[in-house]
Image 1: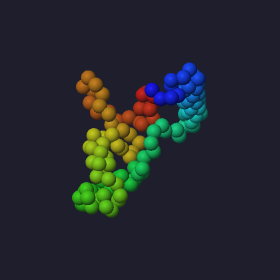
Image 2: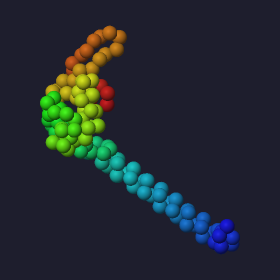
Image 3: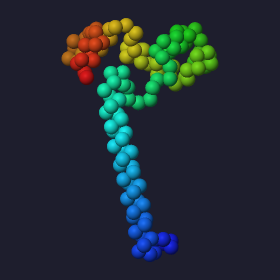
Image 4: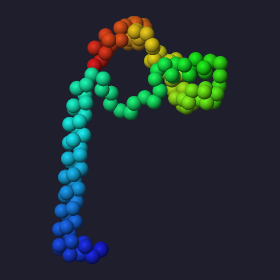
Length: 125
């Protein structure tokens, strides 16, 4: 053990410093929670990291991908290959749709249904 931990005064100081550090951390967490609560009142609030590229930029890169390789499109657009692969997979699944309708599969054999995007938000939110 060091010199500070050997004495009763040293242990007292260490405990007080650790208590102050814990209190400070709790205050930071509370302030973050309050800030999130205030931010969520904004209807345009989106939690998490913002997207680096817009949907139009990704769509343009996917169009370039039809005539060019992944490496060429990466150089032209600046969008990484992994992002292009993920976007292409999402388009293939039907998750990305620029129109006002989206397609989803209902369970129990009802087939594919097209619905208004706002209706889906109302159902699932």
